Image 1 (cartoon, protein in one colour):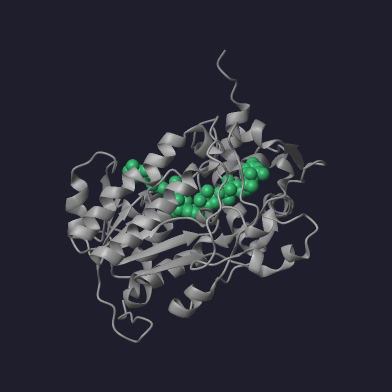
Image 2: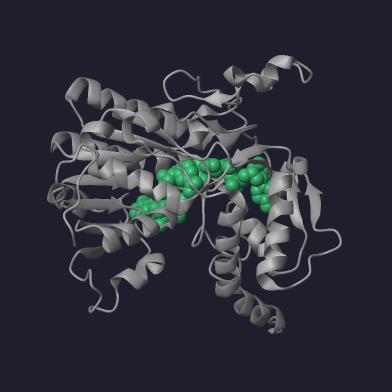
Length: 386
Ligand SMILES: NC(=O)c1ccc[n+]([C@@H]2O[C@H](COP(=O)([O-])OP(=O)(O)OC[C@H]3O[C@@H](n4cnc5c(N)ncnc54)[C@H](O)[C@@H]3O)[C@@H](O)[C@H]2O)c1
Ligand SMILES: O=c1ccn([C@@H]2O[C@H](COP(=O)(O)OP(=O)(O)O[C@H]3OC[C@](O)(CO)[C@H]3O)[C@@H](O)[C@H]2O)c(=O)[nH]1
């Protein structure tokens, strides 16, 4: 492997990374990138490893010896501090991060996103280890513009909706809207990390992902996840398409999101890993402001793309409306619009996303079809036990 250089032309020394939550969607892509393109070592910590099995076995893989899986739950495992001490950098991805859980399992959500992250921050701070912590775009909550009258021309002014790391406020709903349990826990852990940096010199970077999507995201209910489980929108819509069911639009699908391809986003994380002088002390939005759609538009695009990649015609009525109360239960609320400001990540790391929404949906839905279509056919054909 040729010597890698950082953004300032200096050679990059191989490091050891303690990656917590390495077995999840983002972790699996980050491990893949680190193994195939860098000399770094990864201590991969998670309760599951299904999504990184292809990197762990067989022993003959070119990166064998550079990735080591440790099955552990950070809630209660005394090995955690030792593993953080063995590494130069800790990346914390572990979290409950599916909106269906925020209002139905608020305690688990708050514990997972705040309490369980505390020892990670403490061990990094006490042992002078660098930390990259995964937060979320949800810390912005709702836009300022969403509180303006519907016909106000100010709603078109970016000052009222573009989300900036250093100036936008965090606007959540009332306490009974338990949807915000996740955003609030993430906000508090961000504040704690920031304070550790200010008072105790912790070297940290905070990442705020804006709807990263791609292969291996979440699960398909009844195939590789619980039949009653509700994953994030990409997997919900993929599941509907694979089963030839209409896609469910929560409250009419009017909310807006920007989606970024996981492979683009991982490039940004690698720049953070390999350019500590430029990344330390910063909070970065990582998203694609050019890929904005309403959820209804996303459903329409996914329907078209799935018909193309599967060769199967779409339904005459491809979508159906459903209330958020019926879909998510009591206490759900939503972010209206999420456009990331890219100034800081551009200035510090020169990163820009590349992949259009059409292209990323095509590669992702090709993967979904190839991975799940047969299994779904079989599960539908199988008579259910009476
Ligand atoms: N995917 C996105 O677009 C997105 C957007 C905003 C924020 N994030 C944040 O990025 C991080 C990773 O997200 P993801 O999409 O990969 O989610 P994911 O659910 O696929 O991955 C999280 C991983 O953490 C593991 N984990 C959870 N609790 C654990 C514990 N106590 N001990 C050990 N492992 C544990 C899970 O098993 C899972 O493999 C999360 O912190 C999430 O809040 C992701
Ligand atoms: O079948 C469905 C599922 C969802 N929706 C609506 O789609 C919007 C997006 O939903 P989702 O991707 O599940 O999650 P959010 O974007 O709301 O939240 C995530 O953002 C980042 C992260 O922190 C981690 O990924 C997480 O909290 C939403 O409006 C749903 O109501 C639908 O219409 N139909």
